[in-house]
Length: 214
Picture 1 (tube, rainbow, N blue to C red):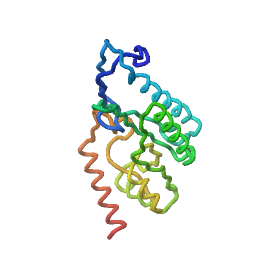
Picture 2 (cartoon, rainbow, N blue to C red):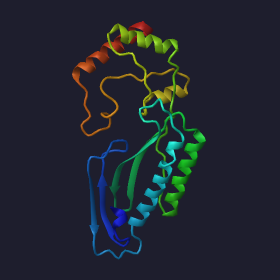
Picture 3 (tube, helix red, strand yellow):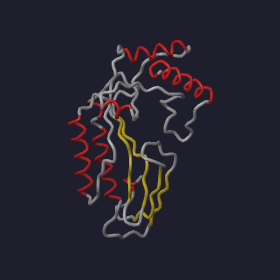
Picture 4 (tube, rainbow, N blue to C red):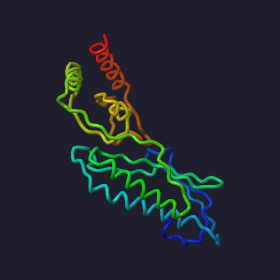
């Protein structure tokens, strides 16, 4: 929509999303048809958006077919207008198939694109992807507890950001397990978890503590 506006149109307010990693449910754009500003914001936003799309187009070069989504994903989750700036925040989820050097290159390209339009690009947090061997004793013990409870012990790869990435960097084996539906539910405006699923999760965590900590 911005691309179809005359570049001199003044954007008075842009507001959308609730945080950086949720799918935006709504947005508001207020414009001034009089325009005539010497330094309009629309071309700057278009330039930066084009740089993000160029990086996003390279995600397909580093697939990991075992993930629900076979390649990295990017979500621009929030935009806010302040007196002295327009702030855009988002998140990028990366499978282990993306080398660290490639990630650095992508971030540098986005930083340069922002600087070309007198803007600032900032990485607020980074959590590297992790992988735990399915054959490890830790993983097999956890699967055994799930089987004892009559629950599915199927292992899958998840393209989400969790504290497991932090622990993994310290050499700690990790398995992500929790109640509710993840894909298609988490970080959605109507995200929810059934009470009975929470109760099963409590029983599972209790058995894990009894098995490994007592």
